[in-house]
Amino acid sequence: MDTKSIILKTALELYNTQGVHAVTSRHIAAEMGISAGNLHYHFKQTDEIIKTLYEQLATSFDTIISGMESQESVQLETLFESTVRSFELVYKYRFIFLHFVEISMRIPSIRKDYYALTQRRTKEFLSIFEQLKTAGIFRKDLPDNLWESLVQQIFIVGDFWLSNNELTVRLKGSNAVKHYSQLFIRMFYPYLTPAALENIPV
Amino acid sequence: MDTKSIILKTALELYNTQGVHAVTSRHIAAEMGISAGNLHYHFKQTDEIIKTLYEQLATSFDTIISGMESQESVQLETLFESTVRSFELVYKYRFIFLHFVEISMRIPSIRKDYYALTQRRTKEFLSIFEQLKTAGIFRKDLPDNLWESLVQQIFIVGDFWLSNNELTVRLKGSNAVKHYSQLFIRMFYPYLTPAALENIPV
DNA sequence: CCTTATTTAGAACAAATGTACTAATTATTT
DNA sequence: AAATAATTAGTACATTTGTTCTAAATAAGG
Image (cartoon, rainbow over the protein chains, first blue to last red):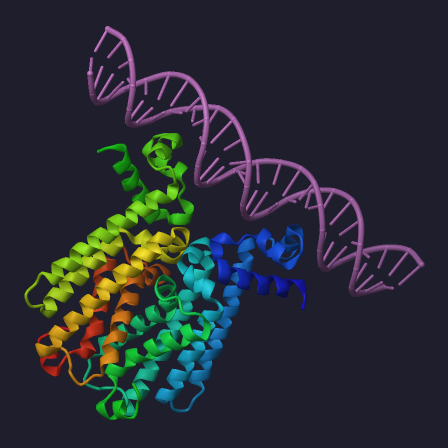
């Protein structure tokens, strides 16, 4: 593995465990056993490391989204599977979500990019909701704007469950992913038709 | 107003507009037109300013909670009114919520205190849910653990709606409060009985 | 009015940080 | 093998930050 990749890997590890504010280019270099000068040869600005890590995350997210879109008919299972994969991704790049506002202030292009990603995800979810309504899985007796609100609600939970975890129970690794992805999935339950509810273990 | 109060007021203003990471004790002193030495006479550690501001927030939150508890019977309106007041409070101390994880890492006592506050709020909400179920406003056909999940979900949205706002639409002031408190309130809609739904404008 | 306590300004310090620069070493190309 | 390019270590610098210290100014108490 080349130096640049090791820098990214080490930085991700350190950012995740110590937080963005506590990790400097010197720390990353020291952890790898290279000089700070060398690190800055590969990344002129320290922020470029964060930016690159964010881009890795965004790319992986898009893969999940297009994976869902490629399905001919979306089942509830598809939605749940994608959720778990998304949550694993969030955990992998958890420092970004734990310090999202800070990072977006430090590197404005990240906020811009994230906003665009949000737009894509919104469309995707609304389309899935429609499919599940016609499939008799989601309720049809609720007004349209409630579904739009639901999308925003699930984005907030999807982006900040880790922050909540950090401030409260502090579950680790797959325990955190399991607990919070279930919490996320349960947001859909009251939107299910009685028939669909019967087939789901709560 | 004494110097200590002005420091707190100025710090809140600066933290809210520039973010915790960008504001130093020197900035606060400069903004007030006093010396950094003077500021450190009143707050030996800069973190004490943040800690004090957090305590102000926590106290105000407890006032809202006990205000709800004092009601003989909780109506949906009571819940909604408290929501709006909570959201206004979050906006007033927005720097805390926008940088919650950072702050809790910097000042561990804040995390501890917040966790305790969360416990109190959880009890409060579960009790309200029970009352609203017996009043025929909330559905009775849903399993218990779904209500516990709902409490966690509304905490995440209640604590991080501002972060979502910052990363996306960036509504300001009362516009943000209005939009997101409505978003919050709508989380309860699919839990309402058909009868209760009819009396609510969506 | 005199003494004491409080408050304030300003200088000073040590530590940390991002980054630039230089020179040496290593790899690649011709 | 020679020349060129890429990579690396180490040093240096300017800036910032939290904090401490000293001395002056102001307020309070007797």
